[in-house]
Image 1 (tube, rainbow over the protein chains, first blue to last red):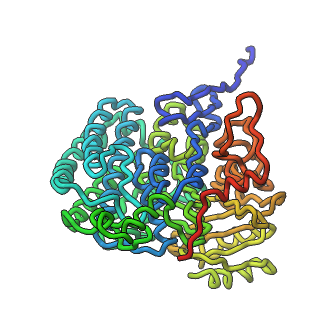
Image 2 (cartoon, each protein chain N blue to C red):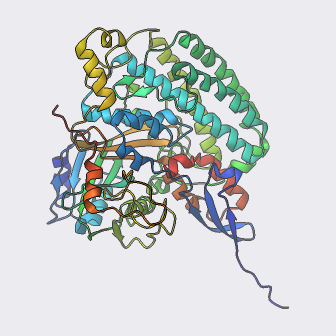
Image 3 (cartoon, rainbow over the protein chains, first blue to last red):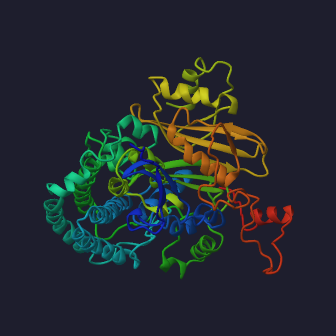
Length: 393
Length: 180
């Protein structure tokens, strides 16, 4: 019998592929439907934000960093603001910390909703996307309420917040928090015991905890493999140590485990947000009292000379930050968002670097999907929840 | 655990290495000479009392005009000991750093990004290609002498040429220092 000639096939996936979450390009080497190797190509969304930040004043960087991980915008600005505040040696009033916690948790829910919708849609549950987007719309409405901007509110500022909470904030947030748990039950009824969904995800894209750490993966991917590492518990910031919540974990390390971990994380976010909204008074302080950084209130600007000068200085020259460097990690929706800043003592950053969890996750994708099926690749990319803006910066 | 306590544990494991505690406001910072970096990293990962299993990120900063010009920065994380550590390696203009991929596999892309952005060579890396910039890009954009927002009339018929003095002036322009 004549020998059958076999060879591997190279297939290009992306950068314009719906399941690559933006502009991720994967060059696959296939043996039939089995993946021999994957070569990710990134950089299509590289906008040089870190370089641009070096030209801006410290406070002008906030809107820039929010555009990195555009689904978890406010976790970027929170990490950056905390880093600058650490160099300045500022401590925030309790109310500011509580509002920041609330915002960070709402942002986590918004980001996870997009993950849930797109991930389920890619595996075939198309209607899931509409349900998830509908709930996220309410979260964007909250953003619009506090800042007039739905995606990149820039509400978190160095030294506190942009302004006080608007009227009707508590009602809107409470309404959402009362409604959302029932919606979560609805989502879970659609997916958690769904036979098709489970067959597509169970035992697929497994990564062990040791390997996850080797690849620098922390956050939901490591927690689905058995780690309990959560920055909010291990290195608390914004007073997270005073909140009552648990860190959901799973041990299988597959796509389904990541799904369960993120779903449980959203439920935990609801409980944290409920505790936070009860602590926040409708009106009160929204910034620290450091006049170097925080502009004086408007009524003083119009009546007092010193306040006018300070206002003018902050908005024209900006403020200076003591020389040094620091790294502040926070638990973003995708894992550890870290902000490393270097100051030369001037009014502009010398260097701003974000640790991007998506960057590390995409690096590990070839390892996770090796010898898997091409259809599983889509499930794996969805489960790592990568955002190309975060990866490419 | 502060820098000197970590150095005390490390010093017998990497004999003769000139480890130096750095100044920092957040957590321990240690300067490591480039030729002892891999040994130090392996000791940090494998010593049970330190257990730095995770390399959170690798990045660099360009301190032009200071000499040596660059600092490569490694942020390590020890989950079991709730510790963080910053390793810094001073690198001159034409010097290189050994890769730490043998210690943490996840170092591959961050090191590639540092090469892409700063042009710092990682010895033994094996895959130092462009990562974020296009493959045919010239120059390393995160360097401080890389032209950005140069105030010059637009030239449409010949490439932009900027002298070194203009580079420097561009960095120093608008940079205001005030006493605290």
